[in-house]
Image (cartoon, rainbow, N blue to C red; front, top):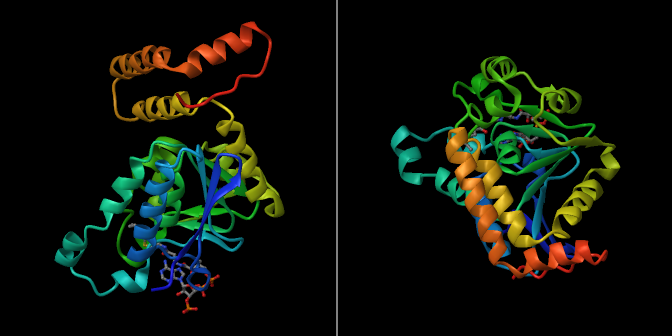
Length: 258
Ligand code: HXC
């Protein structure tokens, strides 16, 4: 079986890169690709030499959605038995930050995969959309939930009900993405942002990610409680002592993840 992803475990110090690689099909996310992506992410999540993971496609497409050809003939019971969202649930559990580097199409499951990442760096050419409505279905991997939380009801409803694409500019304005860069720089900028995060304590970074994501699933009081416990817990780490002592001694900290 040919692989549908390319993994570079050290594209920068402590930064890994996974490229979705089904270019002829605009990186349509078939079951095998998603399983490979889950397996690679789990492996990198367990690798001490990796602190941040960048996921990209190619210039034309981040991913144009789930594989329509693979889904077209399936029944509801097939979908139930295949349980494709198990891979998505596993990716949601990755503790290290994920950065999506998006150029071209991020549609349907492609937009949902970008939103499953923690930050999105986009090329000027990026187009985001949930066009499932045009093929008789609706988003199924978070498009009605994460998109609405990111851009608000008005734009999410319009995108989900009409299938309209939004530009990188509109995505930035509406809070879906972190930044826009020229297309020849989007990958470089994603690596640069990843390297900036990878300089920090990897323990603090993981707990901070977990805490920000908790904001989506909890009341303010529950979220504040969760945040406080993680904050206290970090005082059990060498990195907390190193970070604070380095500040006092006016030097750069050296974080070890211990
Ligand atoms: C399977 C796809 C595909 C997809 C593109 N291709 N998107 N194959 N599933 N989602 C294939 C095309 O069939 C074509 O194959 C080749 O990729 C190039 O695509 P073209 O359409 O020729 O390119 P272009 O004219 O540039 O149009 C680009 C496009 C269009 C606007 C992105 O391809 C498109 O609308 N794609 C579908 C987008 C979509 O509906 N996504 C949501 C899927 S449902 P051939 O062999 O003809 O060259 C979904 C549910 C998610 O994502 C929930 C669960 C994860």
